[in-house]
Amino acid sequence: MAKTGFVYHPDYLKHDMGAGHPESPERLRAIVARLDQGGVMSRLVRIDPIAAADEWVTQVHKPSYVAALKQHAPATGRVMLDADTSMSPGSLPAAYLAAGGALAAADAIMAGRVDNAFCAVRPPGHHAEQDRAMGFCLFNNVAIAARYFQRKHGLARVLIVDWDVHHGNGTQHSFYDDPSVLFFSTHQYPHYPGTGRASESGSGKGEGATINVPMEAGEGDEEYLAVFQKVLVPAADAFKPDVIIISAGFDAHRDDPLAGMGLTENGYAELTRIVAGIARRHSKGRMLSSLEGGYNLQALPASVERHVTALLEA
Image (cartoon, rainbow, N blue to C red; front, side, top):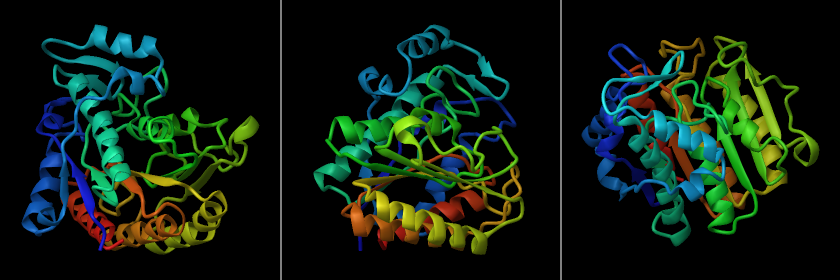
């Protein structure tokens, strides 16, 4: 049994993009309630986040972008950043705490307090580009964590596994020419944000360190497991990561309202076990999972529960 950390902060609920927006505070309330009621929460090691320092945020994002977010952060009401992403008064503090949650999890993993961790954070991050917010995301939490593992803790090779139903464009672009970060993504295609073709495989020294596997609408557990076994496992075994970060979106679930894939809770547990096997072989079990999407308020907490249970069993 592994020691699994759990990152959460009530201020994540203060990021509010308005009534009817799918990326709502209710997502985290549902996750926490499910983990509490099922007895899983009592088995987890609580990790309290603090706001990420700009020193680490700007390892990924341009200082001018960070300054613009601070300038436009509203004292009241809401400010639109793109067609479906906005800031309320609690949004920027929550974004700093979300990135900081991933960094706190990294510290706990590297200190040996936990073997792996799940970060129940919002706003999510994998669509955030170096210089702009998009797709419900302000700061790219997993990209910031990857650089933190490398530059604070001295790890050489980071594997990022992104199974969110939407392609993690921001994460891909953060490391597109960097051979030290292997980015692997499964995602519905064609779908938002339009990136993630199989031909997108990196550039320069990073050629081959981006692996995109576009999935057709309707594909589910069987197809995903085959891709992970046949594509991810050999690539990861060749890469030999020092740590694995999961962009854990649960919107490829068959009941999710924003997509058309067919994964089940059991599928997410099996994907987690495959990644855990890679971590055992190469990364001393080190895995950091950070919440991305997932918008069905029954399927999301059920899937997270199975994912976290698999982390505990890693």
